[in-house]
Image (cartoon, rainbow, N blue to C red; front, side, top):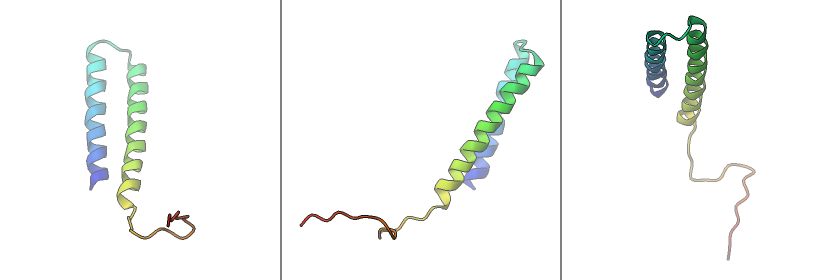
Length: 71
C-alpha cells in the first residue's frame, strides 16, 4: 500500500513540476528530460520503500551473524 501511495505522490509532483515548467516557457524537450528524471527517482524511491516494508525483523541474530558477548 505504501508503494502505491509513494508512486501516486511522485506522479502528482511530476505533473506539477512539468506543468509549471511549461507555464514559464521551458522548451518541451527539457520538460521531457525533467519528467524522465523525476519519474526515475520516483521508481527508485518506490523500490526502496518496497524493500523496507517487506523485510521482517526478528529478535534473534541471523545465521552467520557474530555476536560479541562481554562477560
